[in-house]
Image (cartoon, rainbow, N blue to C red; front, side):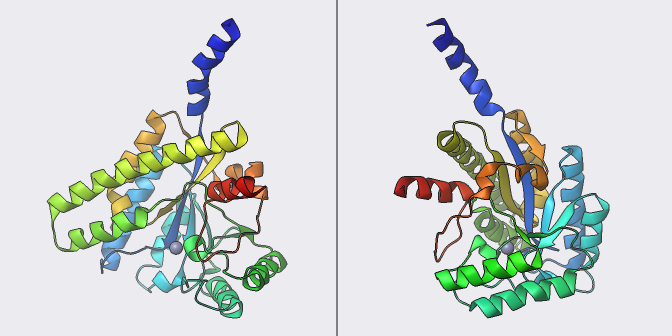
Length: 276
Ligand SMILES: [Zn+2]
């Protein structure tokens, strides 16, 4: 009885001892509804200052399709601030719609164009899509293994990019009211989704898992990353590196899912468990 009482008392505390690695895709800068390169640099400096304030070392994923002569300095800024960079393909293809050979060439092209900045072996699939046939999936797996890449999965998948798309358009139209509304909705959405995956991780493993959060370098995060990281901190979440997160055995399970879509590692584990 006493033990049960103690457990029920401690359980919420255990649930809150969460760890999360922050990853930001589509560097130098993601969708921004036509923002100038100089504004992208200003927004990047803002995000980097926020990460520094929260003592969070992030991993950025580079998409050279977003690079220009004037904005590639952004990649220097990420590295100078102590963050790591990985490969996120050159043209950010939807792998469901292109062949494995075209996709592999695009991974290689990213390395050719951004290799001087990429300082890790991490690779993140564009849209998290790993192939809609076994042959496509396995061709890319074999290529990544041969080239020594480590796939960077995600545990907290979300629709942040949708909020950013609308936010960026409101920013272009100078619609401050809309921007504030979308920013607040974005934070509420991220809280809800983080709590959902926190719970799912505990339900699947019986413990807190080391989370990997998917974000993008974009206008909404230039403004709202502070509120988001502040919320994680207020809930007792600790910021860890991607290297640290990857020590969690949940990421050793590659799974054999063939799908048109991208999957969070936790959704994938849930699916595997339910079909066992
Ligand atoms: Zn992306």
